[in-house]
Image (cartoon, rainbow, N blue to C red; front, top):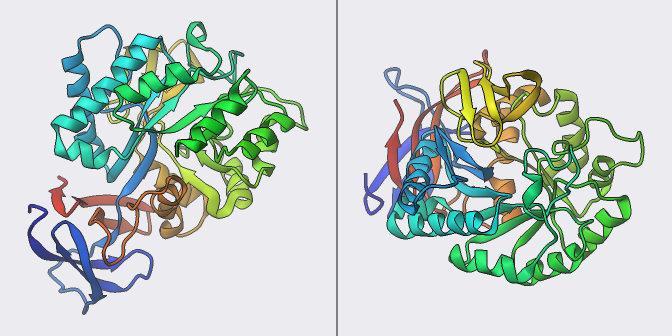
Length: 394
Protein backbone atom coordinates (compact mmCIF):
# COMPACT_ATOMS: atom_id res chain seq x y z
CA UNK A 1 0.00 0.00 0.00
CA UNK A 2 1.12 3.55 -0.67
CA UNK A 3 1.54 5.87 2.25
CA UNK A 4 -1.46 7.94 1.14
CA UNK A 5 -3.85 5.02 1.74
CA UNK A 6 -5.91 4.52 4.88
CA UNK A 7 -5.98 1.03 6.38
CA UNK A 8 -5.76 -0.90 9.63
CA UNK A 9 -3.34 -3.44 11.04
CA UNK A 10 -4.08 -5.69 14.01
CA UNK A 11 -1.86 -7.41 16.50
CA UNK A 12 -0.64 -7.44 20.07
CA UNK A 13 0.99 -4.21 21.24
CA UNK A 14 4.49 -5.24 22.32
CA UNK A 15 4.62 -2.86 25.26
CA UNK A 16 1.12 -3.59 26.66
CA UNK A 17 0.56 -7.13 25.33
CA UNK A 18 -3.03 -6.11 24.55
CA UNK A 19 -4.69 -6.72 21.15
CA UNK A 20 -4.84 -3.41 19.26
CA UNK A 21 -6.03 -2.03 15.96
CA UNK A 22 -3.65 0.53 14.49
CA UNK A 23 -5.20 2.87 11.94
CA UNK A 24 -2.71 4.16 9.35
CA UNK A 25 -3.45 7.22 7.22
CA UNK A 26 -1.15 9.24 4.98
CA UNK A 27 1.90 7.40 6.31
CA UNK A 28 1.18 8.16 9.97
CA UNK A 29 -0.47 6.42 12.91
CA UNK A 30 -3.91 7.95 13.10
CA UNK A 31 -5.15 5.97 16.10
CA UNK A 32 -4.39 2.97 18.31
CA UNK A 33 -7.45 1.35 19.83
CA UNK A 34 -8.32 -1.81 21.71
CA UNK A 35 -9.27 -4.74 19.49
CA UNK A 36 -11.15 -7.92 20.13
CA UNK A 37 -9.53 -11.33 20.27
CA UNK A 38 -7.88 -12.87 17.25
CA UNK A 39 -9.80 -15.02 14.84
CA UNK A 40 -8.69 -18.64 15.11
CA UNK A 41 -7.80 -18.52 11.43
CA UNK A 42 -5.60 -15.47 11.89
CA UNK A 43 -1.89 -15.63 12.58
CA UNK A 44 -1.24 -13.94 15.91
CA UNK A 45 1.19 -11.10 15.27
CA UNK A 46 2.89 -8.60 17.52
CA UNK A 47 3.39 -4.92 16.62
CA UNK A 48 6.38 -2.77 17.60
CA UNK A 49 8.21 0.30 16.32
CA UNK A 50 10.71 -0.21 13.51
CA UNK A 51 14.32 -0.52 14.62
CA UNK A 52 16.89 2.30 14.53
CA UNK A 53 20.53 1.36 13.87
CA UNK A 54 23.03 4.12 14.62
CA UNK A 55 26.00 2.17 13.27
CA UNK A 56 25.97 0.01 10.15
CA UNK A 57 28.81 -0.25 7.64
CA UNK A 58 27.21 -2.61 5.14
CA UNK A 59 24.83 -5.51 4.71
CA UNK A 60 23.92 -8.35 2.33
CA UNK A 61 27.12 -7.90 0.33
CA UNK A 62 26.76 -4.13 -0.06
CA UNK A 63 29.63 -2.09 1.38
CA UNK A 64 29.26 1.58 2.30
CA UNK A 65 33.02 2.01 2.48
CA UNK A 66 33.93 0.94 -1.05
CA UNK A 67 37.27 2.09 -2.39
CA UNK A 68 38.62 2.49 -5.90
CA UNK A 69 35.24 2.31 -7.64
CA UNK A 70 33.21 4.86 -9.64
CA UNK A 71 30.41 6.82 -8.02
CA UNK A 72 27.54 4.93 -9.68
CA UNK A 73 28.21 1.57 -7.97
CA UNK A 74 28.74 3.39 -4.69
CA UNK A 75 25.29 4.96 -4.95
CA UNK A 76 23.76 1.65 -6.01
CA UNK A 77 25.30 -0.06 -2.98
CA UNK A 78 23.60 2.44 -0.65
CA UNK A 79 20.23 1.96 -2.36
CA UNK A 80 20.37 -1.84 -2.42
CA UNK A 81 21.70 -2.09 1.12
CA UNK A 82 18.88 0.08 2.44
CA UNK A 83 16.28 -2.33 1.07
CA UNK A 84 18.13 -5.34 2.45
CA UNK A 85 18.30 -3.74 5.88
CA UNK A 86 14.60 -2.84 5.78
CA UNK A 87 13.70 -6.51 5.37
CA UNK A 88 15.33 -7.24 8.75
CA UNK A 89 13.08 -4.77 10.58
CA UNK A 90 15.43 -1.78 10.65
CA UNK A 91 13.40 1.14 9.29
CA UNK A 92 15.87 3.91 10.16
CA UNK A 93 19.65 3.77 10.10
CA UNK A 94 22.87 5.77 10.16
CA UNK A 95 25.21 4.64 7.37
CA UNK A 96 28.63 4.54 8.99
CA UNK A 97 31.76 5.74 7.23
CA UNK A 98 35.04 4.65 8.77
CA UNK A 99 38.63 5.85 8.70
CA UNK A 100 40.08 6.28 5.21
CA UNK A 101 41.84 8.89 3.11
CA UNK A 102 40.22 12.27 2.59
CA UNK A 103 39.00 11.55 -0.95
CA UNK A 104 37.52 8.17 -0.09
CA UNK A 105 35.53 9.60 2.80
CA UNK A 106 34.45 12.47 0.53
CA UNK A 107 33.25 9.97 -2.09
CA UNK A 108 31.41 7.91 0.51
CA UNK A 109 29.60 10.98 1.81
CA UNK A 110 28.74 12.04 -1.73
CA UNK A 111 27.36 8.58 -2.54
CA UNK A 112 25.03 8.63 0.45
CA UNK A 113 23.80 12.12 -0.45
CA UNK A 114 23.15 11.12 -4.06
CA UNK A 115 21.35 7.94 -2.97
CA UNK A 116 19.08 10.00 -0.71
CA UNK A 117 18.41 12.50 -3.49
CA UNK A 118 17.68 9.80 -6.07
CA UNK A 119 15.64 7.33 -3.99
CA UNK A 120 12.77 8.44 -1.73
CA UNK A 121 12.90 5.26 0.37
CA UNK A 122 16.60 5.73 1.12
CA UNK A 123 15.96 9.36 1.99
CA UNK A 124 13.30 8.32 4.50
CA UNK A 125 15.48 5.59 6.03
CA UNK A 126 18.72 7.56 6.40
CA UNK A 127 18.22 9.82 9.41
CA UNK A 128 21.87 10.82 9.53
CA UNK A 129 25.42 9.64 8.87
CA UNK A 130 27.80 8.29 11.49
CA UNK A 131 31.44 9.27 10.88
CA UNK A 132 33.60 6.80 12.82
CA UNK A 133 37.11 8.15 12.48
CA UNK A 134 39.61 9.15 11.32
CA UNK A 135 40.16 11.04 14.59
CA UNK A 136 40.83 7.92 16.66
CA UNK A 137 43.61 6.37 18.73
CA UNK A 138 46.51 5.09 16.65
CA UNK A 139 47.30 2.37 19.22
CA UNK A 140 46.88 -1.30 18.39
CA UNK A 141 43.76 -2.52 20.12
CA UNK A 142 41.85 0.75 20.57
CA UNK A 143 42.28 1.44 16.85
CA UNK A 144 40.54 -1.83 15.95
CA UNK A 145 40.43 -2.44 12.20
CA UNK A 146 40.79 1.23 11.29
CA UNK A 147 43.86 1.73 9.07
CA UNK A 148 46.67 3.39 11.02
CA UNK A 149 47.94 5.26 7.96
CA UNK A 150 44.84 7.48 7.96
CA UNK A 151 44.46 8.11 11.70
CA UNK A 152 44.90 11.82 12.47
CA UNK A 153 44.03 14.70 14.78
CA UNK A 154 40.65 16.42 14.39
CA UNK A 155 40.48 19.04 11.64
CA UNK A 156 37.32 21.17 11.49
CA UNK A 157 37.98 22.52 7.98
CA UNK A 158 38.41 18.98 6.67
CA UNK A 159 35.31 17.78 8.51
CA UNK A 160 33.15 20.55 7.06
CA UNK A 161 34.14 19.52 3.54
CA UNK A 162 32.83 16.03 4.28
CA UNK A 163 29.73 17.53 5.86
CA UNK A 164 29.09 19.64 2.76
CA UNK A 165 29.48 16.57 0.51
CA UNK A 166 26.94 14.71 2.66
CA UNK A 167 24.35 17.46 2.35
CA UNK A 168 24.72 18.19 6.10
CA UNK A 169 23.74 14.62 6.99
CA UNK A 170 26.56 13.85 9.44
CA UNK A 171 24.76 13.69 12.80
CA UNK A 172 27.09 11.45 14.84
CA UNK A 173 30.89 11.46 15.10
CA UNK A 174 33.05 8.96 16.97
CA UNK A 175 36.47 10.23 18.05
CA UNK A 176 39.18 9.70 20.68
CA UNK A 177 39.15 12.62 23.16
CA UNK A 178 42.87 12.30 23.94
CA UNK A 179 43.90 13.49 20.47
CA UNK A 180 45.21 17.08 20.27
CA UNK A 181 42.33 19.43 19.48
CA UNK A 182 39.65 16.83 20.26
CA UNK A 183 37.98 18.75 23.09
CA UNK A 184 37.53 21.94 21.06
CA UNK A 185 36.36 19.77 18.14
CA UNK A 186 33.69 18.20 20.38
CA UNK A 187 32.54 21.69 21.38
CA UNK A 188 32.24 22.60 17.69
CA UNK A 189 30.20 19.45 16.99
CA UNK A 190 27.84 20.27 19.84
CA UNK A 191 27.36 23.83 18.59
CA UNK A 192 26.35 22.39 15.21
CA UNK A 193 23.85 19.95 16.72
CA UNK A 194 26.01 16.88 16.05
CA UNK A 195 26.32 14.11 18.66
CA UNK A 196 29.93 13.50 19.71
CA UNK A 197 30.75 9.97 20.84
CA UNK A 198 33.83 8.63 22.61
CA UNK A 199 35.27 5.57 20.90
CA UNK A 200 38.41 3.77 19.71
CA UNK A 201 40.15 5.52 22.56
CA UNK A 202 42.82 4.98 25.20
CA UNK A 203 41.89 8.14 27.07
CA UNK A 204 42.59 8.73 30.74
CA UNK A 205 39.73 9.23 33.21
CA UNK A 206 40.44 12.97 33.13
CA UNK A 207 40.30 13.10 29.33
CA UNK A 208 37.00 11.22 29.28
CA UNK A 209 35.64 13.64 31.88
CA UNK A 210 36.72 16.62 29.78
CA UNK A 211 35.03 15.12 26.72
CA UNK A 212 31.75 14.78 28.62
CA UNK A 213 32.13 18.31 29.97
CA UNK A 214 32.60 19.54 26.39
CA UNK A 215 29.32 17.88 25.41
CA UNK A 216 30.16 14.32 24.29
CA UNK A 217 27.05 12.22 24.84
CA UNK A 218 27.86 8.61 23.99
CA UNK A 219 30.44 5.82 24.07
CA UNK A 220 30.66 3.95 20.76
CA UNK A 221 30.41 0.11 21.05
CA UNK A 222 31.62 0.24 24.66
CA UNK A 223 33.87 -2.69 25.54
CA UNK A 224 35.16 -3.12 22.00
CA UNK A 225 37.88 -1.20 20.19
CA UNK A 226 40.12 -1.73 23.23
CA UNK A 227 43.36 -3.36 24.31
CA UNK A 228 43.05 -7.11 24.93
CA UNK A 229 44.39 -6.51 28.45
CA UNK A 230 43.80 -3.45 30.65
CA UNK A 231 44.86 -2.27 34.11
CA UNK A 232 42.45 -3.50 36.75
CA UNK A 233 41.66 0.13 37.57
CA UNK A 234 41.47 2.77 36.39
CA UNK A 235 40.92 2.07 32.71
CA UNK A 236 38.95 3.73 29.94
CA UNK A 237 36.10 1.21 30.02
CA UNK A 238 35.48 1.77 33.76
CA UNK A 239 35.76 5.53 33.24
CA UNK A 240 33.14 5.56 30.50
CA UNK A 241 30.85 3.33 32.53
CA UNK A 242 31.14 5.69 35.48
CA UNK A 243 30.56 8.86 33.45
CA UNK A 244 26.83 9.49 33.86
CA UNK A 245 26.79 12.06 31.07
CA UNK A 246 27.69 9.40 28.52
CA UNK A 247 25.16 7.01 27.01
CA UNK A 248 26.61 3.77 25.68
CA UNK A 249 26.07 1.70 22.56
CA UNK A 250 26.92 -2.01 22.53
CA UNK A 251 27.21 -4.74 19.90
CA UNK A 252 25.05 -7.51 21.38
CA UNK A 253 25.71 -10.11 18.70
CA UNK A 254 26.84 -12.84 21.08
CA UNK A 255 30.45 -12.54 19.97
CA UNK A 256 31.73 -9.03 20.74
CA UNK A 257 30.70 -8.98 24.42
CA UNK A 258 30.05 -11.78 26.90
CA UNK A 259 26.57 -11.88 28.45
CA UNK A 260 28.05 -10.94 31.84
CA UNK A 261 29.49 -7.74 30.34
CA UNK A 262 26.16 -6.86 28.75
CA UNK A 263 24.46 -7.31 32.12
CA UNK A 264 26.94 -5.01 33.86
CA UNK A 265 26.73 -2.28 31.22
CA UNK A 266 22.93 -2.51 31.24
CA UNK A 267 22.80 -2.29 35.03
CA UNK A 268 25.01 0.81 35.06
CA UNK A 269 23.66 2.70 32.06
CA UNK A 270 20.01 1.59 32.45
CA UNK A 271 17.88 3.72 30.11
CA UNK A 272 21.01 5.28 28.54
CA UNK A 273 21.98 2.07 26.69
CA UNK A 274 21.38 1.53 22.97
CA UNK A 275 22.02 -1.41 20.67
CA UNK A 276 23.87 -1.14 17.36
CA UNK A 277 24.68 -3.84 14.84
CA UNK A 278 27.98 -2.35 13.56
CA UNK A 279 27.37 -4.79 10.70
CA UNK A 280 29.84 -5.08 7.84
CA UNK A 281 28.92 -5.99 4.28
CA UNK A 282 29.15 -9.75 4.94
CA UNK A 283 26.17 -9.62 7.31
CA UNK A 284 23.27 -11.56 5.86
CA UNK A 285 25.45 -13.64 3.53
CA UNK A 286 25.84 -17.46 3.68
CA UNK A 287 28.54 -18.93 5.93
CA UNK A 288 31.92 -19.43 4.28
CA UNK A 289 35.37 -18.02 3.59
CA UNK A 290 35.50 -14.51 2.12
CA UNK A 291 38.31 -12.22 0.98
CA UNK A 292 37.73 -8.64 2.08
CA UNK A 293 39.48 -5.35 1.39
CA UNK A 294 39.76 -4.57 5.12
CA UNK A 295 40.34 -7.79 7.06
CA UNK A 296 41.72 -9.96 4.27
CA UNK A 297 40.69 -13.62 4.45
CA UNK A 298 37.81 -14.04 6.91
CA UNK A 299 35.36 -16.77 7.86
CA UNK A 300 31.66 -16.29 8.52
CA UNK A 301 30.17 -19.02 10.73
CA UNK A 302 26.55 -20.17 10.88
CA UNK A 303 26.30 -18.53 14.30
CA UNK A 304 26.97 -15.12 12.75
CA UNK A 305 30.50 -14.95 14.13
CA UNK A 306 32.89 -13.31 11.67
CA UNK A 307 36.49 -14.18 12.40
CA UNK A 308 39.92 -14.08 10.83
CA UNK A 309 40.33 -17.28 8.83
CA UNK A 310 43.96 -17.71 9.88
CA UNK A 311 43.37 -16.71 13.53
CA UNK A 312 39.84 -17.70 14.64
CA UNK A 313 40.34 -16.07 18.03
CA UNK A 314 40.19 -12.62 16.39
CA UNK A 315 36.90 -11.12 15.27
CA UNK A 316 36.76 -9.57 11.79
CA UNK A 317 33.68 -7.45 12.40
CA UNK A 318 30.00 -7.88 13.16
CA UNK A 319 27.82 -9.84 10.76
CA UNK A 320 24.28 -9.91 12.13
CA UNK A 321 21.24 -7.64 11.89
CA UNK A 322 20.08 -5.30 14.62
CA UNK A 323 17.09 -7.58 15.25
CA UNK A 324 19.55 -10.42 15.90
CA UNK A 325 21.21 -8.18 18.49
CA UNK A 326 17.83 -7.41 20.08
CA UNK A 327 17.09 -11.12 20.41
CA UNK A 328 20.50 -11.87 21.90
CA UNK A 329 20.14 -9.02 24.40
CA UNK A 330 16.71 -10.34 25.35
CA UNK A 331 18.22 -13.75 26.10
CA UNK A 332 21.38 -12.43 27.77
CA UNK A 333 19.52 -10.17 30.20
CA UNK A 334 16.76 -12.72 30.80
CA UNK A 335 14.28 -9.89 30.47
CA UNK A 336 11.28 -9.39 28.22
CA UNK A 337 11.50 -8.64 24.53
CA UNK A 338 9.97 -5.18 24.95
CA UNK A 339 12.87 -4.06 27.17
CA UNK A 340 15.42 -5.21 24.60
CA UNK A 341 13.49 -3.61 21.72
CA UNK A 342 13.43 -0.26 23.50
CA UNK A 343 17.24 -0.24 23.25
CA UNK A 344 16.89 -0.27 19.46
CA UNK A 345 13.87 2.03 19.06
CA UNK A 346 12.88 4.62 21.65
CA UNK A 347 16.32 5.03 23.20
CA UNK A 348 18.40 5.77 20.08
CA UNK A 349 15.62 8.12 18.95
CA UNK A 350 15.82 9.93 22.28
CA UNK A 351 19.62 10.13 22.20
CA UNK A 352 19.83 11.57 18.69
CA UNK A 353 16.60 13.56 18.80
CA UNK A 354 14.65 11.64 16.17
CA UNK A 355 10.88 11.46 15.75
CA UNK A 356 11.10 7.77 14.77
CA UNK A 357 11.13 4.80 17.12
CA UNK A 358 7.74 5.43 18.73
CA UNK A 359 4.39 3.73 18.46
CA UNK A 360 1.89 6.45 19.26
CA UNK A 361 -0.82 8.52 17.62
CA UNK A 362 0.64 11.09 15.24
CA UNK A 363 3.94 9.29 14.80
CA UNK A 364 5.17 8.09 11.42
CA UNK A 365 4.00 4.55 10.75
CA UNK A 366 7.43 2.93 10.99
CA UNK A 367 6.38 -0.42 12.40
CA UNK A 368 7.18 -4.12 12.37
CA UNK A 369 4.72 -7.01 12.60
CA UNK A 370 6.23 -10.27 13.77
CA UNK A 371 5.67 -13.67 15.31
CA UNK A 372 7.18 -14.13 18.76
CA UNK A 373 8.08 -17.66 19.82
CA UNK A 374 8.48 -17.44 23.59
CA UNK A 375 9.81 -20.99 23.86
CA UNK A 376 12.72 -20.44 21.48
CA UNK A 377 12.88 -16.72 22.32
CA UNK A 378 12.97 -15.87 18.63
CA UNK A 379 11.32 -13.32 16.37
CA UNK A 380 10.12 -13.90 12.82
CA UNK A 381 9.27 -10.68 10.97
CA UNK A 382 6.20 -10.83 8.72
CA UNK A 383 5.76 -7.21 7.62
CA UNK A 384 7.68 -3.96 7.84
CA UNK A 385 6.00 -0.56 7.48
CA UNK A 386 8.04 2.47 6.48
CA UNK A 387 6.06 5.72 6.48
CA UNK A 388 2.96 3.58 6.12
CA UNK A 389 4.09 1.60 3.10
CA UNK A 390 3.88 -2.13 3.76
CA UNK A 391 6.80 -4.37 2.84
CA UNK A 392 5.83 -8.04 3.22
CA UNK A 393 8.66 -10.38 4.23
CA UNK A 394 8.84 -13.91 2.83
